[in-house]
Length: 191
Image (tube, rainbow, N blue to C red):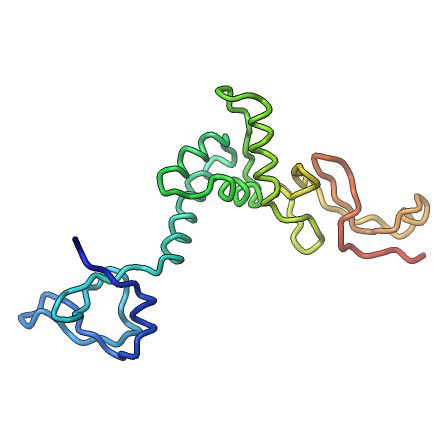
């Protein structure tokens, strides 16, 4: 079994430099802690110990890799997300929510399970989506709304005259798959 130490553990130690394995006649050279990277082998107790990524950094890198792979076509099926996320043990609900928030369409249409089970998956994913407001609104992205999600189709602003004529209070509007609404956090017409 290969012994390992995370880069975070090395950086948290009080030691400023380490002996790192190389191909020189001596077999190693001295490097400062800041210059050590994952994959290096450092000498600890007369053993070469492999330096690994911090767990959080490794998980973020793996998540980003699978997210990029699933987003290539601009849409995917939830059961494909489940399958690909099972290999590196990524939560498929979190992955689907991250993809939908970036504008990737996820279809919940697995024919091997009931429509109720597909809807249950959809509701779980939708609970992880961000709430729509003026600061984060993007065309094509999905947002949480009650127990369901809505996809932004268009963001627009109405004139003060139009707001006055139609008794509308908010000037910034959003058209979603669920309908046409005032954009939360938008400018208010006070006329």
